[in-house]
Image 1 (cartoon, one colour):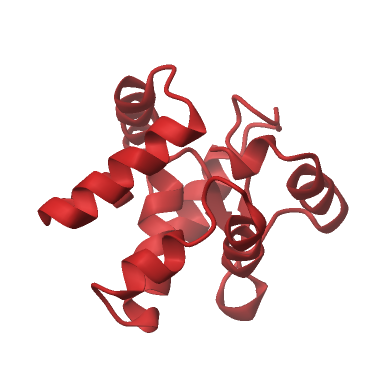
Image 2 (image 1 turned 30 degrees about the vertical axis):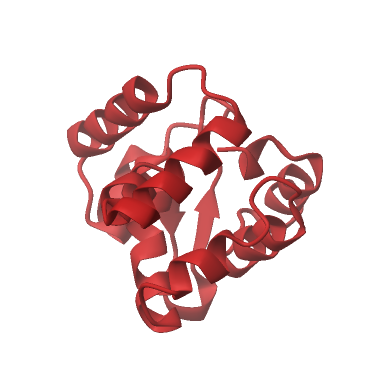
Length: 140
């Protein structure tokens, strides 16, 4: 969610009609708070698995995927960057129904509440150290 609040990510989103996973990972690498998260996760899984699991993680945080293959883009969470209703496109391109998307977004909001970026990163560190990292990373 922190990436979606970044002016540069919002600019990319506006100019190119969405962001890619790579752009989010690049943002994390440059972030003071989230720098090192990818490396931390890669101590537990291979990079291909990390990239595969990142999609559902982004969806649960409110990002919406559209397109496919090398053209896949992600719309930023609607509560951060308002957009036109794209429920039909969500279902057709991502295989998700509106009710499933709404349920994921609601669960995400309940989990995060008003936590700061630093608190979220600490949750991830604790989860990785305790072996509960998959559940917490899905939440982010």
